[in-house]
Image (cartoon, rainbow, N blue to C red; front, side, top):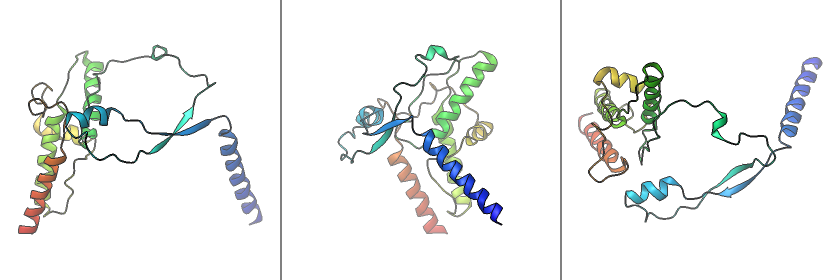
Length: 197
């Protein structure tokens, strides 16, 4: 028993000292967040730049001074990828990231550059979630989020189209915004649940 306790104390002490000395070289500071792409581009394009100011959070930034770090992205091997696309004000990162992965895979395997419609997949995922919500009498989630495996599942069911065929944007709209649309769809489904459940 004493041997077990001694070993446990040794490992705890060793782990603590390793963490303590590993942190000695690195220093950092807490900085106030700066307005970024979301506020400066997306909210302004949605005419919501007049939203009330939220208290700015502080985040920890590591000081890289004196570290041997890469000086340029040219030091790395690059592979082709489409330019990043903003998901705007939506909870559809699951579709944007997975679609980008598949586009890169098409190029890697077939040397063809394709740009696929994220919103086409998102549209059908909303339809399938609504169907499941009704089928399960309101006992399933109807939210914007999903998972990467939803993309190939939806493609197997409904196919996929090029981005220029289905942008999901209204004329003159620069960024996606599902805030009002999702609220209305969820409200409708909750009403169906309350009426017929």
